[in-house]
Every structure is written in structure tokens, then in C-alpha cells.
Image 1 (cartoon, rainbow, N blue to C red):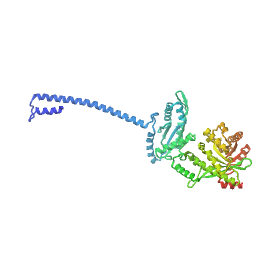
Image 2 (cartoon, rainbow, N blue to C red; image 1 turned 180 degrees about the horizontal axis):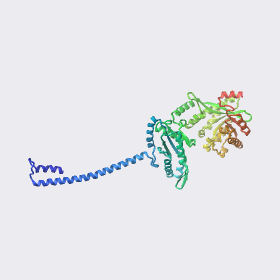
Image 3 (spheres, one colour; image 1 turned 90 degrees about the vertical axis):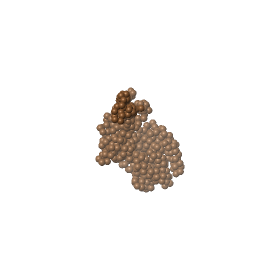
Image 4 (cartoon, helix red, strand yellow; image 1 turned 60 degrees about the vertical axis):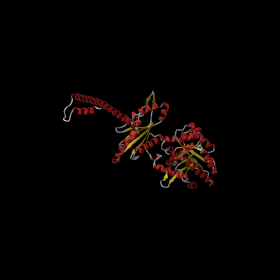
Length: 495
């Protein structure tokens, strides 16, 4: 029985109906019960105090755990910088306010050059330490109000509120400057460089996901082109709606064999006789109009359509070469290959079949590859080009002088021709350095037993200088622009 129940029981015994005490003994019992009740109340209060403190401590621990979990959710554990989630949280309010104020904001994404090589050579712990130092340098470099975030791997993002392109470019320069001082870790001293992609709100995106993706596209474009800083360009974005629509149109026109091939003549620098032409693909879109090759050829390369495009051009050029032979014109035709074509094991067999189909001698076909395409994978290029040369096909190195080719590799390749890049030829009349480069390239080519072609010849004075230097062939507007096959025949007959 609880003390309260005992109290009620003895209360009945102690008092009669007139509220008088009926017995002294029960009175003592009542006092005892009252004492016991008071003792129990004090004990409960003490016990409740400990319970309260325990509950209070538990609440504090829960709050600390919640804060720690929130920090882990919003911050990078390695650098303690904001992560992608927190960066997004800070972007959204800017977008909401910018709609009214018409403000411009910049988002930079930085990626470090050859960082994977550093991890492979020195270990991931070394790479992690370097990333921590980079984070510290960036934080110390950036202006007030900027947010630096690590968004994955070796990629960092920088949010610059109220910033235009010129200001964003200047900040990107500052960040790259902060990396110039070498990093010293574990008694190793290393240099680190970075590429930067820039996307601007609202021009390049009006939401977080789009802006981040477009800044990433700009970064990869900068790395691919070996440029320090690049702003987002929709033409470089494989997933932009406009580019996807263009890709669909390219697939369709290739399926229908609807691309045109134009031909630009090449003349002997001395006697001015035309004995060869270069085949150049053209695309006249029904709604977009003329689309430059530098817009759709990279698209074909990046989507795997370059093989079909090359086959279409080869088929058209070789069949046209056959038509010229039938008309009494013996013209060699040069067709450009992509670096991607060198990875196609079926290319030599496909070309051999086309030559046999149209009964065109292999010596009338020349295949042009840029210097950079050859040097991208010299061993692979040597293997494929040897197979083509075995068929009797001539190989030309295009845009010579713009890459970093090794003379040792050039000597081993089955090359028959060098084409001097137009950037040197066009200015050789006013730039002594370009004139020296052209002259030395002609001498180098001849010393290796190669024919030398100068492209980009636009005036007679340049032609005469090239002829005096012993250049074999000239190609350019001074002779003729690229024209359709029918127009070429008319031009040849008149000239």
C-alpha cells in the first residue's frame, strides 16, 4: 500500500463523523506516514534531478551529433572546404535574387594537370596532402564573399557572386598564380598547374546543375586544347540541345550520303601545271545553311561517326577520280584522315576495296594526316600507314610546323609529302621568322626526299618566293578556292 493510501486509511480511523481524534496510537501512525511521504518526495526529487541532468546531457550529445552529421554532409572531409551540396545551397539564393537585380555571377571549376600521375608516382597520401595545401592557398587567395568547394577528386569549384567575365578571368589568373610556388611534401618538391573552366549566370545557365555542368565542359575543353582558362562554349558541349540536334542531322545526312565534296587544286610552283587536288567535305544544311567543317568534324570524331564520314568522302573522291580519268584528266586526289581513323583496323582494306571498285591506281590517292594526329600515337600511326603505303598510297603530313613531331619518327614513317601550315605561309612576306620557318621546312623535306606543299598562298608575290625557295606545289586562293567537281573541270579547261 502506498503512503497516500495509508494516510487515507488511518484518517478514517482517527476521526469520527464530528471530525474528532478517536485514538492517540493511530495519530502516531499518521505522523509516521507523513514523514515517510516527505522522505519519498525528497528521494523522487533527487532521482528526478539526476534524470533531468541525464536527459539534458543526452540532448547536448544529440545536438553535437546532429551538427557533426550536418558538417559531414556539407563539407569535404579531406580539405574541410564546402562540398558540392553546400555549394548548391549557396548558389540557389543568388539565383533567386539575381532574377530581380539582373546580377551576374561566375562559377569556376578547376582541374589539375596530370594529377593522376602524381598519385601513381607518390601514392594517394601524398596526393591528399597536396590537395590540402592547394585548398589552403585558394582560401587565402580568393576575395571576400567567394566560396571555394571541393567537388570531387582533383576538381575544385569557386563561386564568385556579382562577378562578370573579366573579373572571373582575373580571379582564375590569381588562382593559377597561387600554384606557381612549388609544393614540398615528404622531401619531394613538385610543381602543380591547373586548367580553369568558367560559366556565367545567367548566360551559361540559370540553375545549379546546368551551371556546374557547363563549367565542367569548359574545363575539359581547356584541358583538351591545352589552354589555361576557357569560358563555356555551347559548340564544345556534346550534350547541349543545339549540338544534339546537329548530331541527329549529321547522322541523317551521312545515312543519305548527302554531304558534298569540293576540290581545291594544287599547282606546280614552277610551271603552274595542276596535277593534284585536295578533297574537302562540305555540308550545306537545309535550314542552318553552310556548316563549317571545324564544327561538324569534331562532332563526328567525338561520337564515333568519323569512320562513316571518312568512308563517304573516300568513296566520293575515288569515284570522282575515276570520272576524271574517263574524261582524260589524270588528277591525284588527297583526302584528309582523322587521328581516330588510325584506330580503325579495317581502314586499309576498305580503301583497297574502293580503289578496286572504281579501278583507280593507288598512286593517285594521297592520304593527309595532321602532324599532331600522327604524334598522338606514333607506334599506331606507323603500323597503319605502313599498311596503306604497301598498297601504293601516298601519305602526306598536313599542317606541318604546328605540332611537336620528332624527326626520328618522321624519318621512320612512310611519308611522301609535307604540307607547310598556312599560318606560316600567309605571313611570310611580312614576317621574317615565318619566312625562315618556311625555307627551313622546304630544305628539311627535300633532304628527306619528300615533296613539299605550301597551303594558304593568297598572292603572286608569295608564290614567287616559294618557287625561288624550291617549293614543289602551291595551294591557296591565288590559284582557286575549293569548288564542286563540275566547276573544277570548267576552271581547268579555261585556265
